[in-house]
Amino acid sequence: MLFNSYEFIFAFLPITFFIYFYLNHKRLTEASKGFLVFSSLFFYSCWSITYLPIILSSMLFNYIIGNSLNNDEGHHRFSKKSILTFGIVSNIALLGYFKYTDFMIDNFNFLTDANVPTLDLALPLAISFFTFQQISYLVDSYKQETKEYDFLNYSLFVTFFPQLIAGPIVHHKEMMPQFAKTRNKVKNYKNIAMGLFIFSIGLFKKVVIADTFAVWATQGFDVATTLNLFEAWATSLSYTFQLYFDFSGYTDMAIGLALLFNIKLPINFNSPYKATDIQDFWRRWHITLSRFLKDYIYIPLGGNRKGEFRVYTNLMATFIIGGIWHGAGWTFVFWGFLHGIALVINRAWSKLGFKLWTWLAWLITFNFINIAWVFFRAKEWDDAVKVLGSMFSLDNIVLPNLLVKRLGFLSNYGIEFGNFLSNLETGKSLIIGLIVGFILILAFKNSTQKMKQFNLDYQTVILASICFIGGVLSLNKVSEFLYFNF
Image 1 (spheres, rainbow, N blue to C red):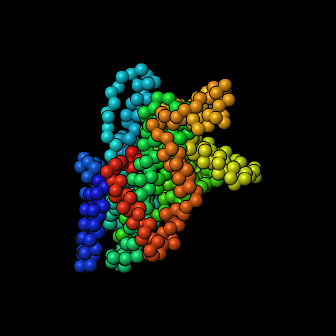
Image 2: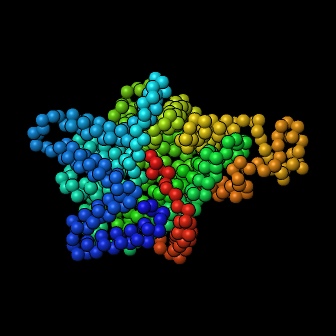
């Protein structure tokens, strides 16, 4: 079941919403929590019932470990540090088994010329997200920052369906107090209106904008065997916009859905393509992942407390780990490596006191991000080489026919005229789409800003209606969210 599906929008969501608040209205608080957990697990199981035992066993294991870390009585047979280490290693081992076993087997076979068969393991849905979320819970429990002795509450923290599949990656302390508030158990019509507004924007971003760019990106990366200069740049930009509108659309939908239940999820996007340096980008893109990487990897490695060289190595290690978290492939590792290098250069540049014009800083940052996304998207190295090679090659330039009268002399220098986007099987629509994409990310307020300025007036209702109706009418071309694969 997808957020962007008829079943979810017109059946699962309204049924869950009304029963949850009906039970709270009858003061059946534990029953309402239990129902929300059941509904969330049902939502999760719709993908595949075989995933259910994995998340249930993971939840039970981490609940027991967390309680042990929270126990102040001092009767532990093992030290709390040993218990925490065991808990973290066990979580990483579970994630590693499903996500990286075949990757390691492939690399072992490549290095040794062996022929060890891969296990062809299916990646359990959301395992990367609920694993990181529960690791943060264990660390917070070790610091005595959580007090959770109720498995039902813990289950609600992990499984709450708006954020279960692809985040945001939340902390126990920012979620459970909200579920405990008495006033949050009563329908709040302002939150309902705001939630539906943000959900509608997210739905439109995903099914109208992101899925349109997806067609062009797929054609360039997976179908076309060769690309000319403009096709290559159109391909990379199409994926850059697809990923942004896909994941920010999901996050908007998650935030909107949570608001229906009077829960405020943390902001995960803040116009990241407006960033003027790579550090600024990571303060704006997938904010809760950046927070996790900083709090649970970068700082424990030493952060910026052990000298400048150590800062650089910590940055590199953190973002290589971040790359590996996104996917079991060397293209993901290299993507993380590129961002680590960029952060190192940015820090060194800042230390030297150099500054660029804002427009130039933005141009460099955006183009670096766009180029790095090529490795993030490419299924194989050859796909990345195909796109990047054409992006920086002057040997295969095709200009549109309408320019032949004025620039026809360029044909003497190997430049051709014709359908300059023929390998993408598109024309003006792609150019218009890219222009609209730039306008939306640079000139318009983002969803967070709209939510802060939310006012239920005719303008808001009309915008929400257009987005919702446009989204619903496009549900016939439903596709999964990109981050479901991570």
